[in-house]
Image (cartoon, rainbow over all chains, first blue to last red; front, side, top):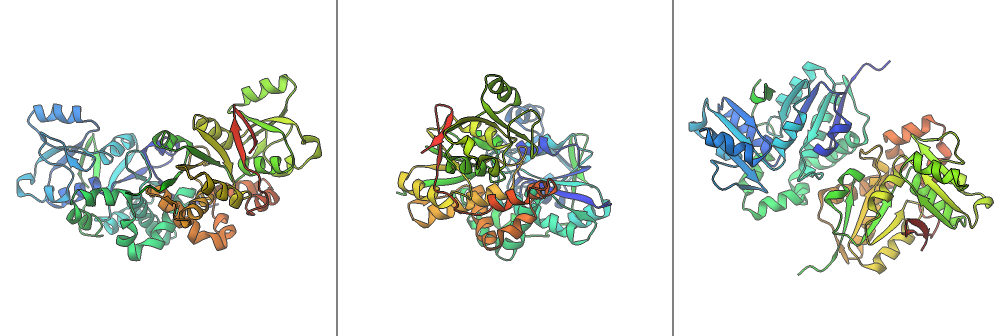
Length: 239
Length: 239
């Protein structure tokens, strides 16, 4: 009998319903840029982040005096304090603060996954630290890609493929969903030249048009931090 | 200005709503086995196929005296005339007949797409004939993969990648969805050894367990026919 744990990949939030309930740990991934920014925020000493799905919820928190980040389609929503650029969170004024965040894709995925036993935040920035922790946990694990407006995207898939490959290489884990096989394959084919590969990514092109090249470089640079943000009682905190 | 037409790939029926209305032609793909069986049926002289989504609808047609195929989870549903094995349709008794078909994934995808201007059936079996016809049409084209129970599958994606690559190679078409880029990439990486690659496919393993190896070999053999089934007034007919 095969008693290895599963590491699988779900390409979009919309498909999560076909995966949920089988995984003790869900890793939410939004490489460009929500989960990269969240890792940067905790690396820089933020106390907690409350992820919300809608601009309306974000506005309610803002009215109560919270610091609130809001991003839609790659840009800061007018009237809010920041968007989802990692550089917005490298700010001493945010140390030990609680902030609220809503983004196009990433916070939506976090909210969809919140019923899972354990929800953590993954990005290329915290890749090795996260993978080591996942191996220690030895639980059935699902990488939930945030995608772009409910569609598949390449950068989240390649990050999920990198996590899968790390876990599979220990021999403790197995994969059998076709999405997991494809993610691992795209990662193995793309890693050495993934900046070039991601140039072909529609979302990367979209951000490039918004002059967000520095953000993109940051988000695509692995292992800049050891933090693992985890969802506790509706708030992200540092594990 | 780029006036090339788009060739894009949608991985699952559930994501179709984010793509529809932008494409004049939708190619429905269910390599294992519905669209392969449909191509085999028209190659063997069937007159028309009425695709229905549910067993209940299929039963209503059966009660009216129609020949009805019904497949769920790889097996013929009890009480029906056949399932979705291509070999079921290589039968002289079906020549010039109208039959009804419901399958786990493929007929569902056909029904989801039926609002499009033109809906045709794609498989590896009619690959080149279909691609040549699509190039002649020169319309915005979407490959809709049927997937497996609403999840991504490899064999439909690789078939969609093969169609994309053919159309892109003419210079008349362009792709910009990440799903299209991934499909093309998986196809280009997998084609020469796609039987081996598809051994890793969960659905192929599922069918192998049902002793359907002959079906799998048939479905994965390109260009066995020139037929292009097309949806007209709710029925599939030969173009």
